Image (tube, rainbow, N blue to C red; front, top):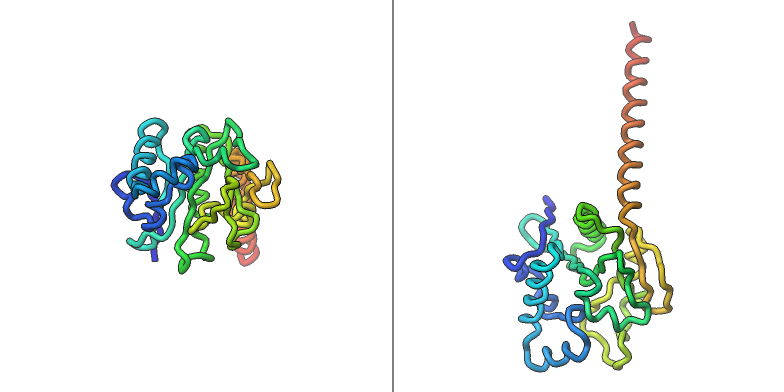
Length: 221
């Protein structure tokens, strides 16, 4: 099945899972989020946030498809556009970084490398735009009932914070430790260096294969 990654727009926002379209965990400060939930306006607020970031800053998300089926997405934005970030004990994010916020792969497609593909797509987009790093607040204990980041005592119905072990597995490093909510960082210059190293290694390997083939032909002659 072919895989494709496209940018998030207002036209394809509806292809995010319903609970994600209605989730404004990152997009609103906690007290404003409670008001939006009370009045049933979270989906409108989500669309307004995406629209505002697209207009003022540019691309702020990626959706991955398997065939024609959307199976995962990532959202990201400058820290100034992510009010919930201020509630974390490991805030603030670094001023030279963009925050990776919402991140989701549907359960039946997990474990196949789609999460890594999404992170690489985000890194590619931001590197092209001159951003130095991606940061994220990670959950060091994913899957537990307590997802209370702001001390309100309210758990979250859906996991809105990316598991720290996943972030570490795709190259993020901890820059602000915390037993539950560490802040992690991926240097985009490192991503570029990694790509160059891989290309150099492939070039060397292909060169060795060519030399070996040429030597074998000479021997037969």
